[in-house]
Length: 469
Image (cartoon, rainbow, N blue to C red; front, top):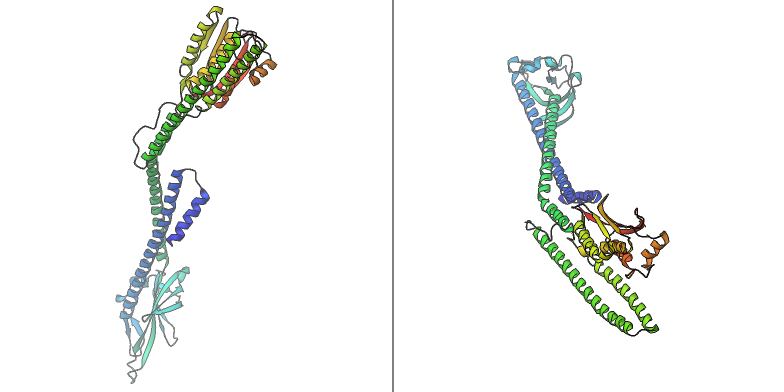
């Protein structure tokens, strides 16, 4: 039986498949409780019904014994009853308690006043220790429980001492009171068990909510780590959750260590590649000629490619590191201050507008790389003014707009610069890869870069990146 119930519960849980662990626990507890209460309610109802029926039958047995004790035969064997020994309900019409004395020889029966003109015709009688039990239809469609016993009296008027006259004494009681009592008990049992079930489910709900609170704290701690508010899982956890917190902290530390090693290798590789390229460029400058010009062009192209792919490799290793959080305002102000000094001879004015609480979900040096390339590019082409504005976009993203008052670019030129990093004017210093590098880093963070026409007439660069509150 227990295996069948367990199998039923497993099938029910498999069909529902709730995504919540709390829902699974509450559902399982509710199902088990429902089954237990249903079984307990059935046992209590059956026990109460059996007790009430036994009490009802005992009452009929007492009335039958009293009626037989009140019977006094005359010399001819005819039975008369002494009223003082009988239940008073026998005298009240349709009271629900009746008797009938039927001679075995088929003569007309003697009936109680409560039956008036009705007679009892029991059916399905079963013997039980000299007493027969059965059912009969009573007045006003009453369903009667019938108890009968056969009793014989001697006939003293005859010379034969063995001459007897037999009667069947019957007592019948209306079962509607019995059924009403059982129905009332079952109703009380149902509502009380329903209230108990609701209270138990509510208690389980509270227990599950309180029991799973440490998991919610783990989730909140992970959210703080991801937003950069905390470097690791902090707080006291129960002994069942503590190993999970330890493993997560170890994983976070290992991830940071791996990224750190990768960045170190990238920096070493950049140094090892750039040093031979610098030597080649120096030798080409010292030995002018067609071959030297070819070497310079190839060295320049190699430097551009090295910068491009090393920047992508460095950024890709840091994009998914937990805990990265950078305030945008200080980065933009620092870049503007440095670039004002670099372009001081041309008198470039750089204006920065940024909310103080705006944060970038990434590393500072990546934001510096992207914003620095955009602002530096704007300064190179601007006639005298560059404007930088940062703000929050709808959703979890930020927007940095860099505009200048320079000549700007046409739609076709903007596409060429973005796709191939092609330089359109060799008179302006630089590798020409700045915009394409910004685009690639932004894509790694799930953002993007768009070029357009600025309100001041020059180029407008719009950088979109993930943000934090």
